[in-house]
Length: 79
Image (tube, rainbow, N blue to C red):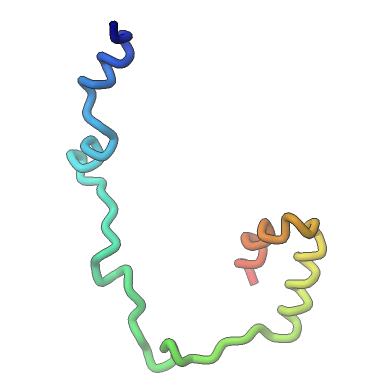
C-alpha cells in the first residue's frame, strides 16, 4: 500500500514542469551568455596580477589550512 505522501507527490507536477509552466527555465544558449570580443578584451588579451596582488593572494591563502585552500576563492575574487 502506498503512503499518502507518495500518492500526493504523484499528483503534484514535478519541479521542472512547475518552473517551465511559470516561465522560469534557465537557458544558457542565447547571445547574452557568450563572450563578446572588444578591442581591449579578446581571448588573446594577456592578463597577470600585479606584484601587490600576488602579495595579497599569499596573505589570503595563509589564513587557510592546506586542505582548505580552495575556500579562499571567494575572498580572492575581490582582487
